[in-house]
Image (tube, rainbow, N blue to C red):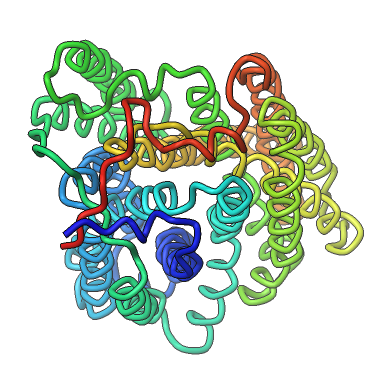
Length: 502
């Protein structure tokens, strides 16, 4: 039975759909930071070594990063609603398994399962949003909210993780996902539109899936190994080299595949390519904020985990304000070519402000202003980039286009994790070597010096992103504006297919 009601602007369920999709996105984003806060307590409880603890994080990121494109394509093939619910159920079960884990191996396995189902859930959530909101003003507002959650969810995770670890127990950092998923599943059953493909269903590109999954696995593993081992490790460069070779093979295969996993036209479009690059650069740069500012607040200013989370809340408020102002007023008027470089420039300024922090600095006078500027930066960059990254894509490929957005963010985070952490550690070591004999004060100053080096490189990333975005994004006269394109059907190959209830 055909049912076009779910695509009409009059459908009141679309805002409830946004709420459910945003809740699912928040769950995925939260998980990347709440587990970090819980890691010391989990290590003390389960008794695993310092060398093994990285696998609690790496298992998730490897599964998530390597399977994102496959997850996005699966949602295109089996239907958004079905994939969305499967992702929620699987993520919840994996979280429950991790929370109940009595051994290190079981916890690592549960984290890998979380990553696998997260790779299905994250792109499906964005694809549901893309195909639900087509009215320009409403689309802008929806992506503003979604982008704010994507950008600020990590800081919320720091606050929630600090509270749960300190007052309830580290296992509840995983159990909390079960409660969130139950609410989202119940809501999805009633409000998420059951959009499915019309006509014959194409086959899954198995060779392309294997090539790109292996390439992304090698890429994330290579950067993770650089962080835990060194950049000079043969395994690091071997995995990164293998990733490059596999990615080239994937591109060559996509040019000839009958049913490509990722049609190259999606990423070769100039505006979408610029959006993916902007998300990657912003993700790499923002890692320095959450990681190094967290360490600075807790080790240098002696904040508790809960107070550390609270310290990030003003940044989240500024991010949400900037996201709503940008997507509802500024992006429709000026376009991403103006807004994204402005956001990148604000990010550069915010990072440079953080380089001035010292052991004697205060939160209110020195940290807070920088966080507010960075919140405005991310609120300007992320919603505009995420909206552009999925705009005008054939509805049949909305899932894989959305997966590219998540892949860009994940790869950016992996690069930021390895590169900035290595640069910070090197700078701290050099500082100690030049201030002998080492004392506790020198060690504390060296840590702050290392953080400053990471902030400086983060500022460089943002500055490069500003130039790149200004050059790559089209002028409004060269193509459809976001507002006009959003009003058009979400397809590049004809009329949108009918909605089939199932």
